[in-house]
Length: 202
Image (cartoon, rainbow, N blue to C red; front, side):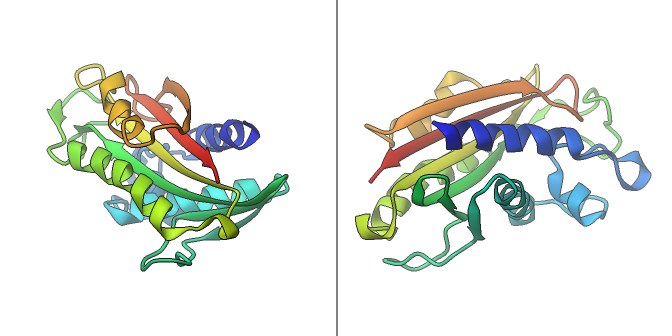
């Protein structure tokens, strides 16, 4: 699917373009909000994901799509992360979530000091899984051509991203088409970024 390829390409571009900021703090896709806001450690929680949504929309807009960031769901309360139209898409409602498995100390610029698992990692994965139901209840066929969930996972050699982690979302997205990608973490070597995209045509 063209959209899957372009989403992964956008995420890779973001990982490469996000250079160190204040005090040479590494950013990359893992801490993209720090790069985008030019503020040391400003990227935590929702701010990290919002920065991803905003930049993905900018990149896709430059490729002939029309993107709306955080539109309201037509059939339920709350907001969706991205609505993408154009290039053959009548409307693709996308939820984009991040999941950080490992935590680093503030001075761990080589990923060597703090090798500690993020206690919230499982909750991050579960939020993405719940987005499957959120999309199915929030958007009717007349509002969309596709719905999809993007999960961007950040791991390390000590705490890798495994097939079983992506399977948490895949088990909810029964009958959806799954696309995956992975690459070395540009800013936080020897970390790794692993992504899944589950899409359903309505």
